[in-house]
Structures are given as structure tokens and as C-alpha cells.
Image (cartoon, rainbow, N blue to C red; front, side, top):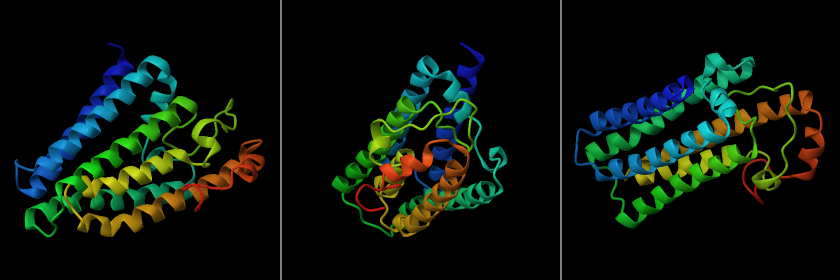
Amino acid sequence: MSALAKRALGGALRFVFFLAALLLVVSGSLFYWQLWLFLAVLSLSVFAITFYLLRHDPVLLERRMMAGPKAERERSQKIIMGFGAVVFFSYALLPGFDHRFAWSSVPDWAVFLGDLAVGAGMLIVFFVFRENSFASSTVEIHPDQQVISTGLYGIVRHPMYMGALLFSLGTPVALGSWWGLILFPAIVAVLAWRLIEEERMLIRDLPGYAAYRDEVRFRLVPCLW
């Protein structure tokens, strides 16, 4: 196994185990079937994407592994990612507390729909990675980078954020929590803030992006914004 494979798969395992341990502690129950189903969908998606990138685009995988506020070069993105980390951490914890204190009563069919949204969001992310080898975790321009306008990029300018939005919408419901959705507007705000700042840099530094922006009208949600 290559060094990159060990790092990537090890990182994916640590992420899944950390999230599982966190929610099990917060929920106070091992019999949290919604969590186990969610983790199965998430793990399958994460590892499928990781294996695909290891085989077909290891350069992109390497770029994706450099993430977080410290990895960002733009000061505005450091601030956004720092704030976003707090929001996403809170967003992940709230369903666990909801389960512990039984605030919500989410029917099974809604839980399954939530998992479907989680899987669909990850599938969108996969299609983005397959289409765009420059879809790194940080906002930056690479020397040989070009504007991508094919695939989902012909529908919205930021399809990976669209996938993240769908994933985020499905997560609390998949975990059996209506109350978890109370923080969803904050998730939308962070994604919108990040992509607006990212577009300013792309228009400034990536040749052809301004014309692409004029051609593809919608940023995040088709026919809406």
C-alpha cells in the first residue's frame, strides 16, 4: 500500500470513528440505529470516493487532504473555515442530544429519506471530483488550472457546495432529529459566504471565469440562486 493510500484511508477511518464515538457519547446509547445506518451510508460513500481517487486521480486526493483554516491562503477563507468548523461541529452534535432527550419523533420513512439525501449529496461530490481535478479542499488557483464548464458545472457554478448542501440537509433527519435542522440556515450561510469569496478570487485570477459566470447563471441551487 502506498504512503498516500495509508494516509488517505487512515484519515477516513479516523474521521468515521471520531464521529461515531462523539455521537455515541452525546446520545448516551449504543442502540441508536439511525446513527449506525447513517455511518454505513457515510462510510460507503467516503471509502468509495477515496478508492476511486487513489486509482484515477491521486493528485486530487493529495490536494483534498490539505484542508482546514490553516491550509487556506486567503485570510477571508481562514476566517470562514474557522467559523464553519464551529457551525458544522455544533450541527453534528445536536442530533445526538436530540436522541438522548427525545426531543424529536422522526418517522422511519423520513430517516431513510435523510440517508438518501446524504448518499445523493456524496454522489454529487463524486461527480464533481470526476469532472474537476482541481477541486481541492482549499480555495486556490493552480498554475495549469482551467475553467470547467461540463457535467454539473453546466448547471451550477459550485456543484460541490450543492452536494454539501444536500448532505447537510439530510444529516440531522437521517440521525432522527428534526431539531438538528435549526442550524441548517447557518450551514447555508457558511457555504454561501465561502463561495462568494471564492468567486471573487476566481474572477480575479482564473482566465475565462468571468465569461463562465455569465454563461452559467446559478451559483448553488438551479433556478434559485
